[in-house]
Length: 157
Ligand code: FES
Ligand code: FES
Figure 1 (cartoon, protein in one colour):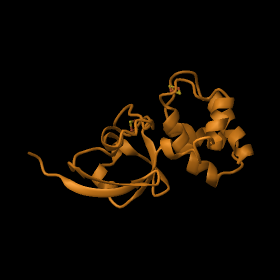
Figure 2 (cartoon, rainbow, N blue to C red):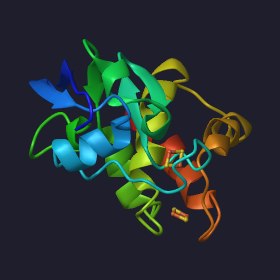
Figure 3 (cartoon, rainbow, N blue to C red):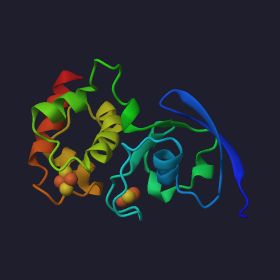
């Protein structure tokens, strides 16, 4: 039987304690231990950006972290992005309005990458937006609707 470690962390404002194997990826911990399946897993080696979440306010790829490394941290996943059950985050509202959801699989990663970035770049240019999106891979339709959504969200914020 493999060794396990106790970790405690906060996810979307809720405190969790779990006994985990040190080799467990943070993305798998979120999906399989906490049932937070909004965090998607594409490449599992840090390339696609689908698994992006916030750790202590910073966008990180949860497939590149072990769950034990998040011990004591405050996490935000896409499930916690909206301010309330009847309210969307401005990015979510803009994605819906600008038809930026596209395949949908990559959307949580796009949103979690953009949320802290937009807070620091309230008036972004198209070029800045495309650069910010360059770590999130989209193979379906291109990025045009997503760029439009980010500009729309910047106006709403
Ligand atoms: S699943 Fe983590 S970057 Fe692709
Ligand atoms: S948004 Fe998922 S592949 Fe384009």
